Structure formats: structure tokens, C-alpha cells
Image 1 (cartoon, rainbow, N blue to C red):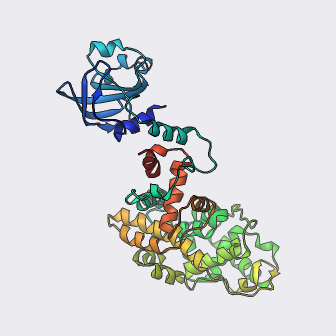
Image 2 (cartoon, rainbow, N blue to C red):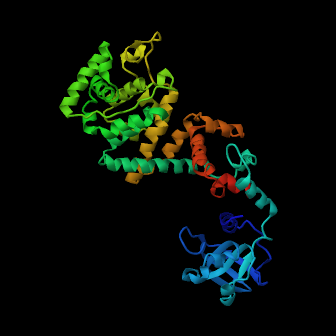
Length: 422
């Protein structure tokens, strides 16, 4: 038993509301439970109760045991002078200061259903392998939750918005530069995301932008910053090396260490291929930001990415100096396109819409409902519990739920936890 659970019980009136009596036998009626106070002071403000026919308005303090009032030294704190009701799970001790002020106490122990306590104990105490409610979970728990997926998804978007807003400050309010950085992070995939982003964070975007009119120039800059081109001998590497040396001198570039990883990646996702594809989209759309903001459907976003491909050298290469027997144009797959839309285009669109005060939520939701559901270990484990996912909107919602509530055991703030404890 803890105070967080009692807060939940009081706030949502999860106890027997009829025939309530205080510990001194007074009849108690609840008009309004008040609002939870996130700061110091009484737990709930602006509550209204009727005690023996007299209405009282003020604050409510909640403890597991009545003796906690003295233990927490509330009798010495003037912030607790306006208490109209002291709520406890167990009344283990008479509190003289409350008695003198005629502040009543409500003992909840006999008004809470045993099933509610048992379910909460299961969530709080029982061992689990994935999420606390895995043994209580059913699909029926989701049905009463109106707007559950949209609420969780927008919470996730708002987290991304905060990062993008900070990035906008660093980029001197240049949305094109922001988009390029977010796009680089997305093209890097999980393994090389930070390394790709590092290129666009540490290199003056004005220098990068000047290369957008020529694919070879942009590739020479990006590859030159990430690889030691002097170690490669084929013709393509020589072209990149010479151009990069020219750019180094012209812009006084200082080469930093950017560690790119190849292990645990399929060859099609090697950073060499992804850097070239990133170069392609930046040279194809030199005002890409306007296209991203202007697109209103999934097909319009797909169209932006349809012609993105690695330069011809990579048709039969995955790394420098090593010809592959597999010769193929390295275009983006549909799943790769959808990940870019999900992780770069839509978050930037959302952040921009909030910055100008123009709601684009319906457009974003409509696109999310068309995007394929993601595949990863967390989603697989939810599927093992019986959930079927029909879109990226739903998988994004559950990924946010898992990261922010399941991992932190915030069952009392979760829609599923709420329905379990009904």
C-alpha cells in the first residue's frame, strides 16, 4: 500500500461512496474530490465535502496511516491549516492537532474492494518478464479507452518536438537545416543515427548547402568527413578525395572523428549506401522543407522519396575498393521510405505546425493510419499478448506507452492500468 494508490482511489472515486462515516462517526458526503496538487503542500486542493449536513471547501491530505501526519510534521506546517479532511488507509493513531481543529479523518480500508487491492498488488509486486500487467492483460482493456492511440502518439510527437525546437535554436531558426539534421539522423538508422547527425551538427550548414547543386561534391564532403579516403585506391574514391581536399582548403574544414558502424547491418543498410542516398535526396530537393510541409498524403511523401538512390558506384559496391557480385541500383525500399516519413518528415511537420500556430494534426493522423505497423521486439511482445497492430499510429502509441509507463511502472497513470483497476 502506498500514497500513490490512495491518490488514485480518491481521485477516481474507486471506493464505496455511500454511507461514508468519519472515524468519529460523522456522516460524510463527497461533492468534489479536488484537484491533485503536483507541488508541495496538501495532496488535493479545492475539494468540497459535506460533514453532518455542513458543506466544507478546502484541501485534502492523504496518508497510508494517520500517524504519518505527525511523522511528516504537518502539524508544524501552516500550509496544512486549510485541511477539511484527512484521508488514511488505516487509522492507527489519534492525531491531537487534528482533533483540536475538529478536522475529520476518513479511513478508507473498509470502503475499498478487495479485488481492486489484489489487482494493484499484482501490478506493483508480482514478477513479470515484459510489462507489469502481462498476466492480467486482455484486448478488452483497450476498448473503453477513447482516443488511446492518438493520445499516446501525440505525447511521443511532443517529445520529438522539444528536441526539434532546441535544434531550431542551434540552427538559427533555419528550418531547412533542422530538417537536414533530423533527416540525417533517420538515414543513419538506429546504429549510425548519432554519427550521421554529428556531421550536420558539427559542419556549418551553409557549407553543406553550397554542395547541394552537385551530387559528387556533396558526397565528397560527407564521405570525406566520415572516412579516410587516402586509404582507398579506386577511381571513385580518388574523385571524392581530390574534391574533399579542395573543400577542406576552401572552407578550412577541421576533420573530426565520426565512428560509423557496419556490424549487425545488412549490406543494403551500410552507412556508405545510406550516406549516398542521403546525398541524393538533398541534391534532388534543394528546398526539401517546403515539400515536406506541403505534402498532405502518404502518397505525396512516398513520391518525394521514389527517386532517391545511391550513386552509380554503389550499384556494385557496398564498401570502397571491393566490387560486389550483386549489381543493383540501391533505391529505398518501401519500409525504408516509411521509416523516413515516420521519423523525420512527420515530426518536423508537427513541430513546424506548432511553431506557426496552424494545426496539422488531422493530416498527420491520416498519414500515420496508412503507414505500415513497425516490427521490433517490443511490438512482437505486445502481439504475443494478443494485440494486433494495423498501422504505425498504433505501434508508435504502444512504443511510447512501453517506454514511459510500462518500464517505469506508472500503472496508475496508464489507460490499461486504469481499466484493470476498475
